Picture 1 (cartoon, rainbow, N blue to C red):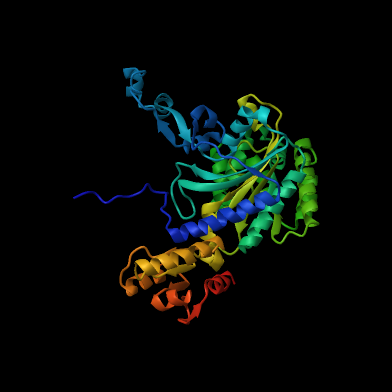
Picture 2 (tube, rainbow, N blue to C red):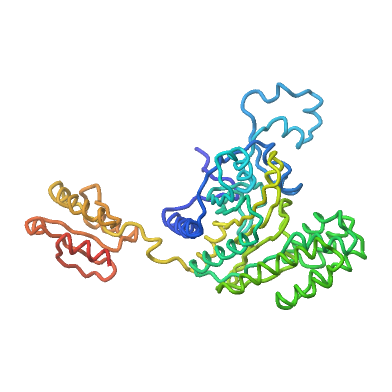
Amino acid sequence: MAAKPCIPKGTRDFSPAEMAKRNYIFDTIRSVYHLYGFRQIETPAMEMLSTLMGKYGEEGDKLLFKIQNSGDYFSGLTDEELLSRNASKLACKFCEKGLRYDLTVPFARYVVMHREELTFPFKRYQIQPVWRADRPQKGRYREFYQCDADVVGSDSLLNEVELMQIVDTVFSRFGIRVCIKINNRKILTGMAEIIGEADRIVDITVAIDKLDKIGLDNVNAELRDKGISEEAIAKLQPIILLNGTNEEKLATLRQVLADSATGLKGVEETEFILSTLAGLGLKNELELDLTLARGLNYYTGAIFEVKALDVQIGSITGGGRYDNLTGVFGMAGVSGVGISFGADRIFDVLNQLDLYPKEAVNGTQLLFINFGEREAAFSMQVLVKARMAGIRAELYPDCCKMKKQMSYANANGVPYVALVGENEINEGKVTLKNMETGEQRLVAPDELIAELKK
């Protein structure tokens, strides 16, 4: 007996109904990106490991899916190397390629490779799957879609402002209430400087970014494990627990970071973004969150994260400013800033809150019942007109019992059924049945189209 098929943990199949919902998400985000002047590109699912490694920090590198080389990959290995059982070193010998971890690093590679064809600032968006060898759990998958928008070749903070407007517009269209959290890597650097641990910025940010997941005591324990002194940890507490309005937090930060030029620069940038957005009528909450660090090492300025307010789930959008990501590929001095919508988590949020518009997830609007060759031929003529009018319509392909055909319509949520028999053909009309109310009436093809276009 054949083994029952399965799929890898952290991946999912999607039914037609689920795909209709996902396409609603993608189409909504895509339409907003177009509204703000972003243009679409795509990059390969796999990249050279040399492109990916070292861009996400030590923790990120561990989550890269590596692709085994084809052919005899043992030929270049010594017995000593094989017996060493050193997984990371052997992986480098076995694997030259990997599945992309995000869309930002491949985008940076794209910019460098196509620099002669691009006009800067370059505004691109990308909607494609990414892969992470993470532990699957609720809201966290090994294969998931990102919907990214980035601007490269401009230092202007108006780009950050525009990206936050995009976030606000997208979630307003979805009907999801969110909190848009903002921080600045320079503020975090300034915090590390004033507590005397400037060279431990990565350890500090990785730890405090987990505050809402593991709590303050565990964050402090992680800081101790990383070798951060008790004095430095004590100095850090009032900063990461700072509360009040955004204006009050900024005022306190100016005092606390007075001896850090980098920290004050971060405060200045954050104040500009927040004050500009305050006058643009955002519909969602905007919060300066000093614990927001995001683990990716390439952020150098503003960093963003979006949390849904009515559902318990992780971040559903994130992003930030990176000043020299293209530099690692030999193209220095190109600043960029971007955001990434987590389509899979948005899918879960919309499901939990039941926020999908009915018209966005409906499939076929009209099904013609097949009573035989002559009836089917007449139905096909009307069907062509209906489709030309933009109505999603189909003819049941087989001439079989009407009960079976009506069951097909019910199972697929088809709201209208068209019945064509000898009387209808003689009159050049169709009997249109509303599957919800049961009402049916004889209509001309033009009337049928008008009814379904309402």
